[in-house]
Image (cartoon, rainbow, N blue to C red; front, side):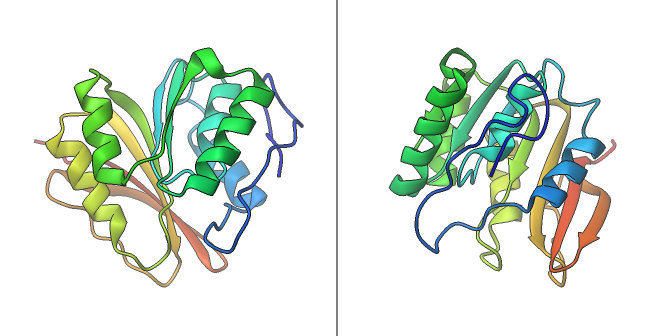
Length: 184
């Protein structure tokens, strides 16, 4: 796995060992960042179910101001920490090894507000709407925030109150859904 573009383009990054993590395919990541290219510069990013941290790290490489990168699995956290060190992104990232709801509360308590959120939880766990609701309840989102979620293509993801599905793209077994605040 590698960083696709930006200042650290081509740098190999480590994925956590074990079958608990499913890294986003490179072609899906390329498409994701193509769609979000105008959202990334100077963004404050939250990569909530990070795995290797590839999404948050890619965003920083492409010009995001800061990224909070979280995964509740210790092996994933260790891989993320190694990747941050290798990329020299220590001053532009904060790492958490917490349950998603605790991570959201910690970030909000630290005064963080996010322009861009990546949600790539385990498929079929129903965590995307729950995580979005937690972010909204914690008042952790900037006005106009984009939430990008990866899930199974055959899975419908209904946004919680206050959000709307802005776009959805399928990539074989995977899908990307992009959510924004509901108008009004």
